[in-house]
Amino acid sequence: MPSRDDIKVQVIARIASVVHCPANQIAETNYLWQDLGMGPTVRQAMGMPYTKISQSYKGGLVVSMSDAGKCNTVKDSIDLVTQRANGRNP
Amino acid sequence: MKAVSRGVVGLCLCLASTLLLGQTRGDQANVVPENPIDSFFKTNHITLAQSVIDKNSIQKPAALQLVLPSGGKDSYSIDAGLTWNGLYGQWLGSLWEVGPSVEYHRNTQTKTPQNTFQAGLSVVDGFGDPGTVFHYVQGVVQYKDDRIMSGQGVQASLSYTLVNWDLAIGFARGPDVLQYMWQPTAALQYEGADNVLKTGKSGEVGRVKGHVEAGLYPFGKRLEKRIELITQESYWYDAAQDDAYDRVQRGHNLFEASGNYWIDVTQNLGLGIDYLRGDNPEQGLARQETVMLSLKAKF
Image (cartoon, rainbow over the protein chains, first blue to last red):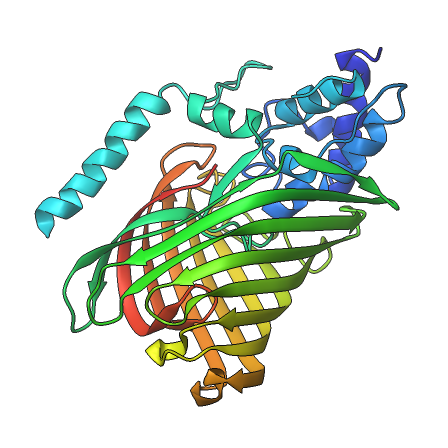
């Protein structure tokens, strides 16, 4: 069962690679759109890397594009992937 | 009119103060208050926007509008679409989701009225890497009841759009003083209807659609992108017309320009002014030119 801290590092790394920004400049309180410039289509597309993180753990579930698109903050994204990686629905 | 305008603004401020109280940015980690309506839409996999057909482009909010037409009576209109995306999965390295959708477009203006209800199924497939290029293919099949333009029938659409960092497609890029983003979409559409242009005759049409939209965000980071200026151009060409559609003009274009101010930081509720010129065969909107002051919502 992955911990939230395990997931947090990976989610921030993935977001950082997508927005071409160093991971140490991304905080949980950052808004994906307002601070990082990730528009609706990009936030939905994050379902793909989030799913890869989630399914790297036994029992990890798919993160849908709609659920990923509804994340407003980095914190929302970490919480969503943590839930899915632990086999829970949002 | 002024009373109605004041009413719209008052309703907006009331909703903002009651639902979104305390939704300011917190400096403490893990403290990002959510409003209950946003949580409801998230938990139940429901999306509210202007239309479900273009939900993968810059998301246009559902709108309750006060219409101020050039040379016509003032009126109200509503543009809203709801989708449920509770069914989803992974297939051959791509993500897919399927869900029912409904949308309603109503304009009570007597000169160019609009009264269209659509309900059907939406399928989205996404593949690629959002860090480089990510592709979306969306299929929509809907029952359409257009009480003004074409009667009852079926509308189907297959569209494609993408995300690309280098081209700023889907990403807000540029200096803080003026950030920008754009999104192109291409689509093929089919429509069959039983009362085309009130002739009492049925017909079928196959359309090719191109759509480009661009957003500008002055002082994007400092103002948290609460102010947005969006222009959109859509063009449909009736590549194949049959029966009653033979009488219909082949080319359709719609230009829209919007200025929005979002009240809350998560951009669920806002006020906007929209300029629109042209027609929209998808939504049964006859050719017109309008300026609209709107209360907007997206979840």
